[in-house]
Image 1 (spheres, rainbow, N blue to C red):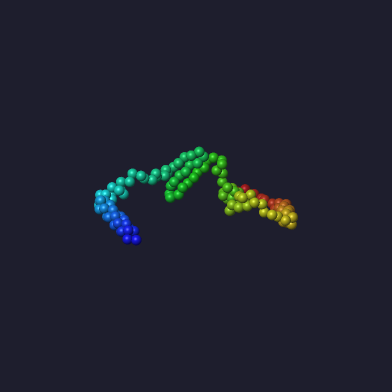
Image 2: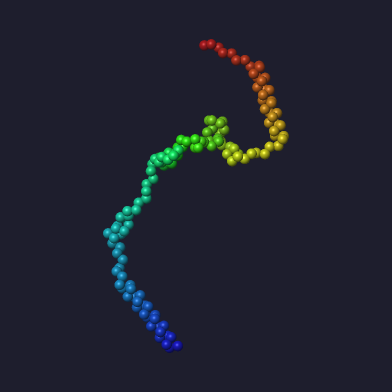
Length: 138
């Protein structure tokens, strides 16, 4: 038991002495202004700046006014259904057409639509017969 305690004491004192010698051999850290500027200010690695105008096949990407604009000039960049309301008369895009989803209809719905279109045709025919257009020369 005494020999084990003696060996343990020698090991602990030897490791403590070795740690003190290593710390004594290292120079103190240099926090001077010149050293900090050399380490942090002279950084040659810089991020690549994104180009303002980039031209690719079928696309021109423009970065201006804090936004990214992509102008496609080939036919595969055609607008989606409903995105141009002045062409197709719809104010908002129809999500059912965009996803190809069909709405389920009953036979009654089909008959009602058919009857409504027949009534509209009848009214239009009647108005066409009774209305007359006169043009006054100026």
